[in-house]
Amino acid sequence: MKHLALAFTALLAVFAIGAPSSAATFPTPVEGNYTIPSFKFDDGETLPELRIHYYTLGTLRTDASGHSNAVLIMHGTGGSGKQFLTPPERFAGVLFSSGGLLDANKYFIILPDDIGHGQSSKPSDGLRAKFPHYDYRDMVIAEHALVNDGLHVNHLRLVMGTSMGCMHSWMWGEAYPTMMDALMPLACLPIEISGRNRVWRDMETNLITSSPDYNNGDYTTQPFGLKAANDITWFVGSAPLYDQSIMPTRDTADAYFKSRLAEMPAGLDANDELYQVASSRDYNPEALLGTIQATVMAVNSADDQINPPELHIVEREIGKVKHAKFVLLPITSQTRGHGTHTLPLVWQQYLAQLLSATAH
Image (cartoon, rainbow, N blue to C red; front, top):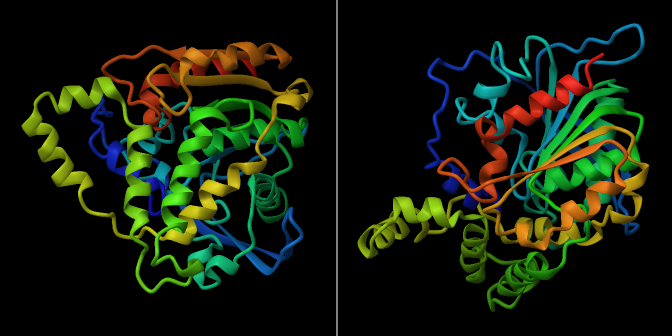
């Protein structure tokens, strides 16, 4: 991440999977900040001003029935809204360009930076470990405030998200059941974070906070354990089949490590990473899945080590949702483990089905 996402970004930077041959033609994104005064967090802590940074593409339109062309897309742990725009040939170039399924000449695309991420308020802005300990509920409430109060959107054509944003999608469907037509969670499970998924997060937290130079968050240089924590992120997000194809020998594997993984990426901050990993602690949509009214298309990939298919969790839970379908993408030369969520060429046919099924 620039935080956790740099590890996934490093992975995706080498994921060439047949990008569109023509140059991306989506409209120029508009950046902005929405400030929420006296934001009260779930645990009672407050900030006098919470800044939510965002990008939008296209023009908001609302029909006579109140349905809009707005699409909310939420990023993963350590990411930002900008990750969907760069490189332009990957996500935006496939979906937002002229003729794409989410053509920004037809849709109004909203890409927020969540609390603790991107250019939104975060620990590394200055408060460090004194920053309020936000959780997913806080993040979803802030997303809603941006959409509803900041951008004056009271109904969404589609809510979708990747990884952490995938989990937020389930939460949106439960918290605001009549506010969207469709939900597309990409790369997550609709239960609390447990098992290996919980343990690797505990491992990262322990690596950072147990570093002698962490100094309770008041470090002068990034703590020693941050590099190892970032390595764990790379490992759990990687794709064995693809990795073997680009590193088939001892020498190519060593060269890959030296060229891409040996050094800690610039921009990592230990407090930001700790907060990002810890924010998932309240996530558990399982009990309220039956309250979701939107049509749901949930998509995972079979090589996702963070959400292993052999657990069969989504298959078990999806029946609780009134109008829902689950797709498990098989492992192919195009899938990239957890990072498949950011490669719409692999899964856009299911987005097309969802948009068609919920068309007005």
